[in-house]
Image (cartoon, rainbow, N blue to C red; front, side, top):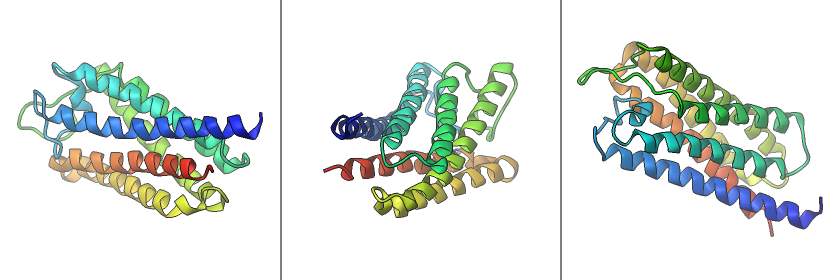
Length: 214
């Protein structure tokens, strides 16, 4: 493969990933303004897929999966292949697949006025475990890929932003675990902090890949 098609390809994938991250965030915000008006502080994001406009959130889950694979495609065309990049990309792919799977298994929504996670059906249980596994896989991927970025001559300038968003995603995931047991009324906030880290990492790294090209 020649350098020019390789460069053009990764620019396209990086641009698509940046657009995907922005669209996902915008759709998430808009859905909170629509019935049944879930609370972003206390309600899990997956609740948005339950209700009259739930189909939009399911499309958004699929869109996040596509965004993830665009990031992977852009990364795979940047710099020499290393064990860190290969393993990190593989884990990120697992996270992307998990996001897509969420679109086909609805979460169990708690009663009005209640907080925290509620699991009462097989479908809801699958959704919960797939979501948790996807978050963990994405975080592990970010750790490895951020270490790879630190050693990359093309993306070294993206290291501070990649590290910051990795730490934010990690803090959000840790907070999510704590809220489940001790502060269920803040579960939605913790999950969204984690999502900001995930989307922010994807956007920042994709932007750096675009800037790395002449």
